[in-house]
Image (cartoon, rainbow, N blue to C red; front, side, top):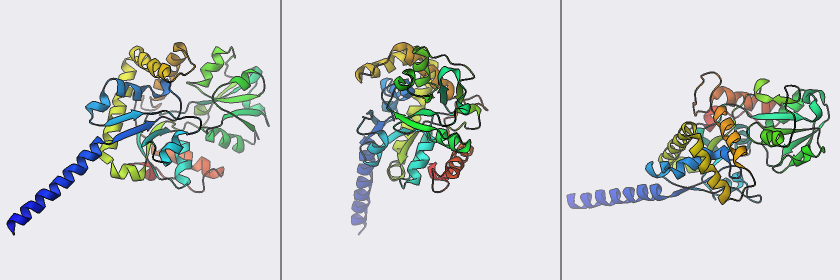
Length: 316
C-alpha cells in the first residue's frame, strides 16, 4: 500500500512538473497595436538585449496588419498580449471580453487636436476633423459631445495627408507621432491652434499591456515575467536612448516602415516623457485607479459604455 502511494505521489509530481515545463516553454506572441516604431521601443529592447530570455519567458513580437488589427488577433488567440489605450480596453471589456492590465507604460495622455490656419479648435463648431479609422479617439468624441462642438469625424488610416492637403479643418494627432509628421510637413504649431487633451481635464492614461483574463489566469507566472522583463526594457531605453534608437530602426527596416531616424528619435523622446507621472515625477508603470474612474465615467456619460468599468476588473 505504501509502495502504491509512493508511485502515485511520484506520478502526480511528474504530471505537475510536465505541466509547469510546458507552460514555461509556451511562447507568448506579443502584438503591439500599431506598426513598428519607437512607441514600442521597450519591448524591442527587451527582446534584443535578452531580457525576456533572462526572465525565462519566450516572446515573439508580431505586428498587426491592415486586415488583422491587434485586438482581432488577441480575441482569436493569434497572440497572447497586446498594447491598448485605456479607453480602448474599457470598450473591449464592455463588449464582453474580460482583460487584465499586466503593465502600464503611459502615465499621461498624448492626444491633441491641430487646427488649420491657426484657428482655435474649440471655435470651429461642425468642423471636419480627422480621426483614426482603428480607434484611439474616444476622449475626443466625448469632448466634442460635452462641449456641443458637433464635429464631423473623417476617418483616416495612418497619415496626415488629408489635413495637409486642406481637406480637413482639423485633425487628431498623437504628440509622439502625427504631431511631428505635421511639423515636418511645415504646419505651424502654436498654443492657439493646438488643443492638448492632457491640459484640459482629459489626462487619461493610454498605452498598457493587456491579456485576456482567461489566458492570464492560466499563465500568471509567465505574465509576471513578461511584464517584468518589458519594464526592464523600458527602463534600459530611458537610460540608453541612442542605442535604443538603433534597435528601433532595425525593427523599422525589417518591417519596411516608411519613416526616418529623426522622426523616430522625436517619438522615442516624447514617449519616454509621457511615461513620467506628472505628480510623482517618476516612471510608475502602474494603472491609476483614478484615471480608470475618470475615463469610465466620461465614456458612460457620453454613451460610449453601457456601464462603468472598474479598476478591479482590469487589475491582476
